[in-house]
Length: 369
Ligand code: NAD
Ligand code: TYD
Image (cartoon, rainbow, N blue to C red; front, side, top):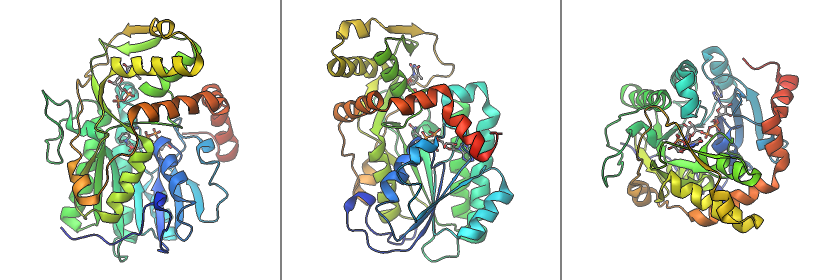
């Protein structure tokens, strides 16, 4: 495995050296991608960013309000599964670095509509790899960074934790489609020598997350006195990571990782869903003055998700040892920051709920496919 090129300091480090890279980000209007762009674009003025996003229900142009007018940022609405459009975007922009976030990302939706996941996550990743192979791979220091999930490993038994060599064993159409994408990325390294790196991250939370995922859904429902629906008995365990820590970890791998390698990213923060929801009730109670007992009464046990993985647990020692990354945020503090954000950003929440931003997209870009 060859050592990768140096890409300069991370966006938060403050003294970024000029590197003049063309950085193509996919899925940058979604939750993690928009956090990544908001952290990176203003801090790397000598790099040019192109955000390719299909603007599905999970995307929101409001996520990018702070950066859309910056001179080093461009946006193009595009389906990554459309090979012709992807090839044209690559041939125009000639990316040095691709950071690939775009995906259908919600397990429950994958159970209802698996085909959308195969199309976006498998075919989309394939088309990006082909375009990268044709237009970017020969550029000095080029890199394709693939953002993936710990869910590819399936449910972990006992006290074990996922390491990078843990056998893939995905349970849902979402995790299976991400696993397939990871295999393609690795195959392009082995077969064509494409400079690629993969990160498999645990569950993220933080500002701008679409309120269908556990933490934002529970925060908003608790704030509004609505039921808090817990699947099964609430004993499923996830490892939680604040989204800004995930974005820092991606930069750490881009800067200090090695081509052809995989790095697990985790928060060292395993919690049963029940515990997460109880903590959300406590934080919301402290913030709003609502008695915590009233909030906990909202907890409702509902039918379990089919194929629901019991436990995810990440061993993130490789990225710590090789790239010097460890999470900076504690769960309680970052959860408090997240609760405050959802309380303050009513316009964002109302826009997502009312579909106002979907209408904005249709007016500006035409109907969604
Ligand atoms: P998200 O659903 O919030 O955003 C996904 C973005 O991708 C949206 O902007 C959407 O419009 C875009 N997109 C979807 N299909 C597309 C297509 N065919 N062409 C172009 N754009 C398309 O997802 P997220 O939570 O921000 O996750 C981003 C990435 O991180 C995904 O690859 C996901 O698998 C991975 N990941 C997420 C988590 C998590 O907890 N959210 C954890 C680990 C890994
Ligand atoms: P989710 O946020 O959908 O992420 P993922 O399925 O990718 O881990 O769910 C996190 C956990 O919370 C998962 O075990 C399912 C559970 N869950 C509930 O109990 N109730 C809910 O309403 C949701 C959305 C999730």
